[in-house]
Length: 458
Image (cartoon, rainbow, N blue to C red; front, side, top):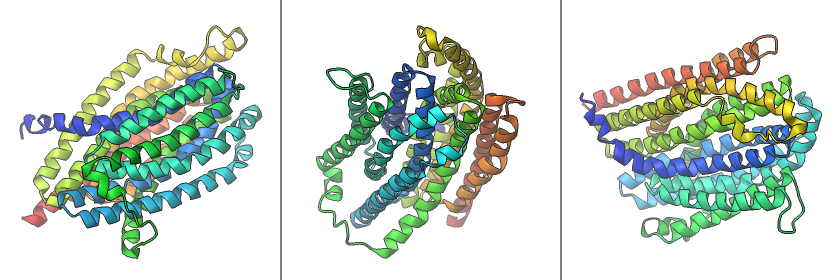
């Protein structure tokens, strides 16, 4: 088949994916701004935000992963022009996201004592705990927002969550500035100020997205007159059957990156701070792939609803190709600027911390070389995973992600990441091994399923 059959889809793929990318980058940008502003306070403060956010990443992965069950159900109902099915999917999904948000907040809140058992630097733990109290509470509005976002994405209305996220970012940056450093008469709260900024901005984000969806003809009837506690057990079970494996898929991946934070902490505060810099930069490019993953989920879900399996496969491959091209571009940027990019995060005018900052920069520069290499496999695995979710195939991919990250990736990180081996770089070699394994196995799964669907229809 000619390459044009795939590239002609690039424009629509981009129209669908770009707002998702910007919205996801917005979530990451909150962390980016927190890291840069907190980094001015010192490496211990930066490591504390890293440690606190490591708990948050795990909880967020479960919540965000679970919420992705809503998108393919809405996309399928939208293609079938079945409003009742779509509203039921949205209502039950939003209810379950709200319950999950509360449970995740409680889980993180009561998990704080684990920090003392993880052999992390004591000064870092003491700074991280008050930060985590507030940021944990922000999980409730964040997961509720995800319910609305995934619904909006399923209707191919991907711009509205982006607008809400961008507004939240502006508010977060302003609040960070006045609360971290004590501007305009406010006290200087340090890293706790960053937590206040995150919490307030996430409540605004939910309210504004609901306001936008209520104002649009296509979505108004879905998001108003919701009988929240009139529930259908069958629909709850259906969303749980899709959402629970999807949550575990994201959990297995995020957990190995979180394990990298903890393994770096065993090497000291400077390796941990360097790991945070490399992780923050690579997570920003990952959000571009996440945007394409959502586009893949929506477009495959639409074609599944229409039962056009040849088109489904062609469109999915156009997204895989597009993701690979973009990933190559990011890999080149990371490799070319691996010495320059980490300098954004540290203050070389701070004479007191100059030795620490220099060490952090040296370690982070090496980690960005590993990050450059895994851009391609990271992009492919998440876009293919999105396509499989669009097919509502979640159980086998969950097993694949567990095997890839925890039976392949983590052992490599553990053995290669020790101080007497390759240190921080060895930890990231494990991440590369896990992501590459996942990309290959998930692609094989998608190829098998789509070929079987075509043969069955014939």
